[in-house]
Length: 314
Image (cartoon, rainbow, N blue to C red):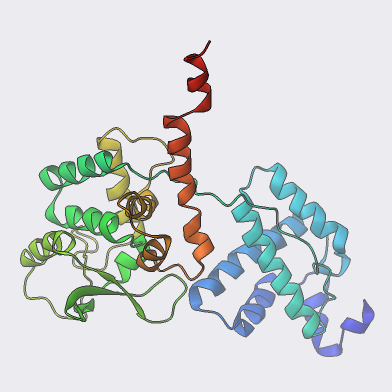
């Protein structure tokens, strides 16, 4: 490994290596947005903590240690998605470390665990969606009703609702739309259509606020500590979760993200095509949208099972 150590790099490979310095150097070189840099940093701290707990140094780590780290993550019950994110950060770190001649790439070729292509969050059936909207319209503050209604009618992610500004409501081709700053994007380069049913609660909510400016958040906080500031994803998620719980959907599979799944599945139920659902949810890969058809396949399987047909014969 000595060929990877130069005089100027000794501080990074010494017995008491500076993990935070390494993380700072690595993330500064990553050509990604700030959120991804933070994610890489968190994942690498987890990895460096594991190294320290096992009385290792970075100069000691070989491929078998990376594989052991992966195994221990699995044994700890981490989801395949979480493990994949951790390992992706480790692989990227060693790619960078080898390119800069700090350490050899001992993580090269280490695979992430296979993840079943399915959605764990449950969508709502049309009757449940109607019940949810009825509850929100008659029980919740106008802001919270506007949020839940917007999510379930457009498939917005919570982060996209948080990022929305008043001025993002505009028109395209004669239709009212909301410009969207999507997940992993650097600008508002997409949109969702605001039908009358999607827009009316938003209009009612905005009417309760004093004169709004285009750059103001679409949804603002009412709490004393953050009054009129932009809502957080945590707040929106809690509003959705509490509303779902109120109509009897209290399982872990029902969350704010269920509303996005509800949008996709019910587009298909209403006769929409996979392409229509893909464009609505703004998926770059149609294979991602295709997964939603599994919900409908499962419903058909349960409603007309071969096993039940046999009961009519014997």
